[in-house]
Length: 335
Image (cartoon, rainbow, N blue to C red; front, side):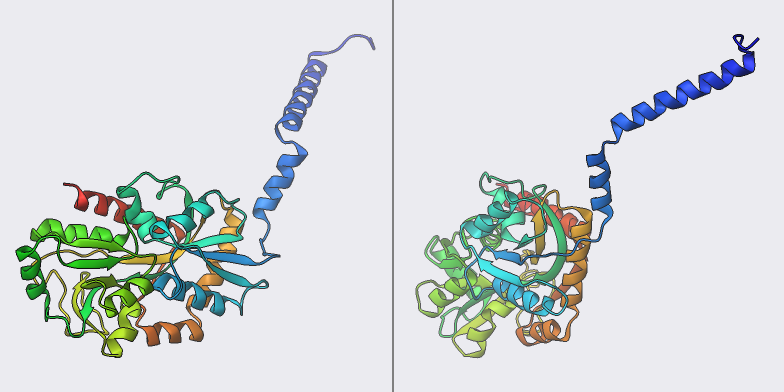
């Protein structure tokens, strides 16, 4: 009888063959490389070489100041140096393009959320997609736009400036941080709703445009509060309007454009972004490190002394704000 199998034996043999087949399939589906990759994805990421933060504007502007103070504050938490490198040009697009084409390994970031990701793509084709080429890490600040003139300017307030602009189209000049940048878009929106035409003079950063204004080369310029603060305090420039939804603490007597009857509010965001594809474990380390840096006494003191409006958001929330701002500017500047 040893050569005859019972029905129970058949069932046992069937189960054995099924399990053997399943084992073969599992062996094919989960290779050793896939197992190692899955394990690496779950591992804690800690950098072992310097992290570079690119700034798409010249030294001295808000993006540069934020990056350098954030990097300095992060040195207490990071086992590696955090290096800031200026790559000015094309309203921040030069730095953004470099990062978009860099490996998403956590070692190359840039200061974004402003011109290069919310405005520029509405003016010209880019080599990257402002809304999908990056992984946002953390939002650091919201920068209201301030319009300043020289202290000796004949335009004592915004109404006088608008009247002069209407009387002589494309005569009054303004400085921005680049063609297609957020200040350029702000001026275009102002022109659209007020019926004026201004002369645009782009620069590589706010520091350059403020120097040109103080030197008498242009009639007005847009900047963030911390970008204009020094020259205003020194008596060389005068703020006349805030292009935001609320007044600025540093200049409580300066009205918003909405108060003047022209609802132009285009805030400039600043935060850190990495290339698309950044692994979750690298994101978590970068987010936590720079979040703690933002809360440090060193960074808070910088914010207080410069008038920086800290505005925190995590990566996903920051990305949503970038996308929303992009669409809002697109709609606002349409003819």
